[in-house]
Amino acid sequence: MKLTKALKNNRGVTLFEVLVSSFILTIALGGLIASIGHSLYLIDVSGEQTTASEHLHDMVEQIRAEPWDQMGTTFPESVTNGDGNEYAGVVGELVLGNEQIWVRYPASTDLDGDADPDLVEVEVTLQWQDKRGHPHVASLTTFRAR
Image (tube, rainbow, N blue to C red; front, side):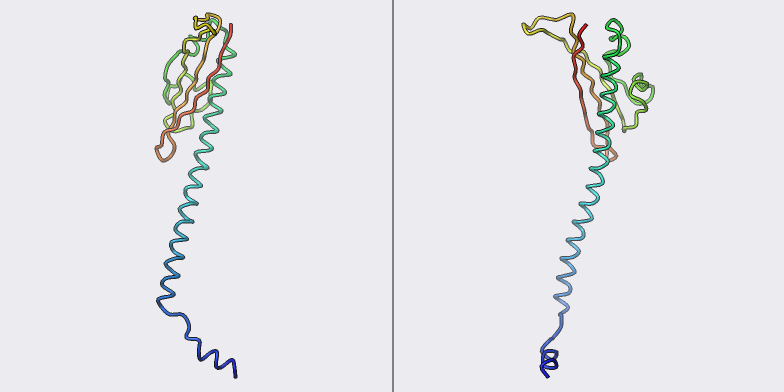
């Protein structure tokens, strides 16, 4: 008896309540899908940063292994772009989008500010674009003593 009274008093869910809950669910799912897409993009960028770091470390190790007198000719101070890259043999295949590698030798000085002929600062910079066209830059600096 009590069950039939409860069923008679239950009017159910109105159409307005269904529409509001559907709207809220749609907004929540849209945010979830957008966050998944952005997470996948960040995973790609992280992989590219790892590749860039490997390229920088390979380049610096090759420069360190080069004899002192040949360092400037083997690794000239320049910008090198994708195809025909003179540094491609050092870092392997250039797989990052629009990858560019710079090698610079800023003036090295001792603690007094005087030029030190037996010390060279080596700065290797790598720039690339991700799949969305956003630019990224990574740099590594080391010193090389005679």
